Length: 494
Image (cartoon, rainbow, N blue to C red; front, side, top):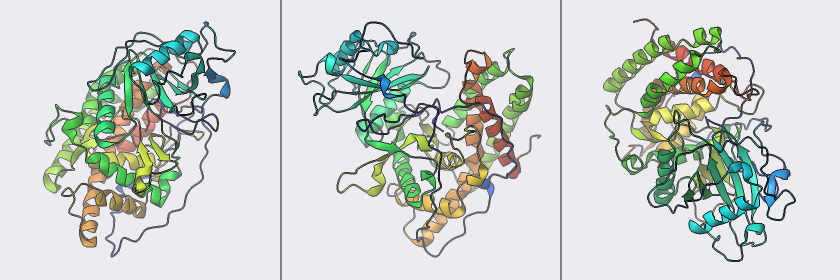
């Protein structure tokens, strides 16, 4: 899902569409879901050949409440709005822990996001870019009054900007991210930064981080478009995503998480997240302002019992059928976290035009869980009238899953998959399908707890105009979790 939504769209022909996410949000009533999740539908039937399947591209509603603001927020040093007074935008510049990582240059400057239209801000920003030696920004011809800054998004979590210098054409566009006060309950900034740095510097995956400052970082800008909900259903695009996921799953786990073990008994991220978030979720539902009906409907005591029984079942399945590989997983490959480059360097494989962004939740998990989570994102549309509701009827069909599996397996590192013939590939796909079905409920479980934690400010009354129904989303995910474990034969009683 691209949780904590901030979508980057470009505001002019100069700034191209780019998006890293915070979930777009809107309160609306929870739609009832009576359909059985297709995850637990028919197994894939072996096919004598693996000819491509032509899937229709669906239309989509591109409107979003999180779209880029108007050009009035595009500021240069000579702009009439360029003054020493702060502007009223929803950025909280409270205390934020300094986040550094070995191998990245760091500036000791702290930026105030709410003052992004002021002369002091521009001067500090240029100091940062020179200190970290951002590509093409050490040119002495670049002055503070020539810098142009475009506000892309603003929230309690991040303020994001495009930075350029139109008067010096050779200057590259940069992405500036200023952290908001971190709750520490869902995201570890130091860990996220370490992950981004290792993935981009060693594996050329995701945006390059050029450097950090006291309360933020400077990243690579991609001339790309963000995928849409309809794009996920395109046969070729889906195959590209499968290939890119296989490459990510080939990353050396210990390169990004040196302390972990690939042993089956190691606590995987989904287990760790649910255990660590469940206490925060209980606090939210225990608030005096939490609706009684919602608290009863979510029933975290029952959920905790169901989760333990489900995990016991999964462990039994893996002892009997074999373990789904533990990999470095993205865990949030929804369409808003996937970019498509507008041009590809000559000689590069087609699938490399897909860029994966937002590694806030990336961690050690079963490969099948990462795939299952992506398939559930096919059922979401964060730009329609009920963005919190999943629609199981949109879950990929057996043919669409086969297309994804085939590309995924063919792009795994040598020795990881035995798929070297059509028969072998069919067997590999059937095995992967069983693993995906087994781990599918875990995706719903994790985002259930996440949704409750995210709802805290709404429940407390601090967010007077919420754009996303986090509790409705949590209930939707909870219902899906319970429906799927029942289909697996796992009851809610011992």
